[in-house]
Image 1 (cartoon, rainbow, N blue to C red):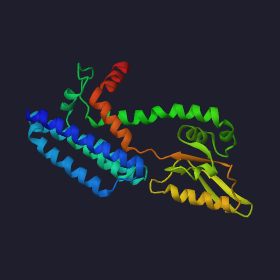
Image 2: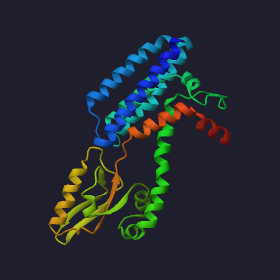
Image 3: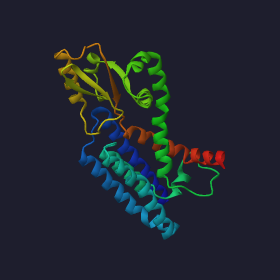
Image 4: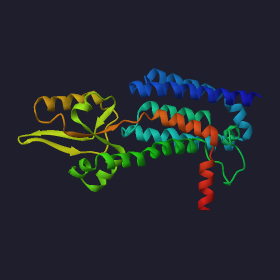
Length: 270
């Protein structure tokens, strides 16, 4: 009974945290450090309460799964954070998931827990991150199709490599310069350099997580005011995905399906 109550408490805790952080991420694209660290403290406390129960499954199992979860989750995400690909709060949230659900015992509490297909039980953080990234990847085909239908000529005119064009089809969107000035949390995938002949535009495929979209809008506004860029010129932008949101949805899918997707993939390729 104690184990069940603790599992429910951990599930409720992480969804409260993820829901609140998702709202902050969507609205402000920023999660204050004090909230992120406070939530990690809460996860650590729940982890410590779980240790006596988890150790009943054996010290070796507890140690291997906990270390593996921390290596595959927060350590990997910390590497992405150091390369400015994600924010610090994303790392902390993944660390919380790894701490709250280190052992595969959580699988029996998922909605569709059932017969095992795979001979091994994976650390729960793996299917959670798989679902998270599958949700992000699911958007890509729709973005490509939309861009090809509506902005085919814009992409065709870009002075960049075919590989970059394909990446931009999947992740970006052209908008008129004047319209960009009213958008929130959209980031330039072009660099503008003023020359004697006008402006030199260089395509890029990503942006630094620390960049501010308002600075990008200020640049475009200045270029328009100086007559170097027409308000009707198309510029290439991207929406910085609030990564906490797909993490929340990926965790929800995990609580419903467990690792069924990975199991069926194993069955298909075995």
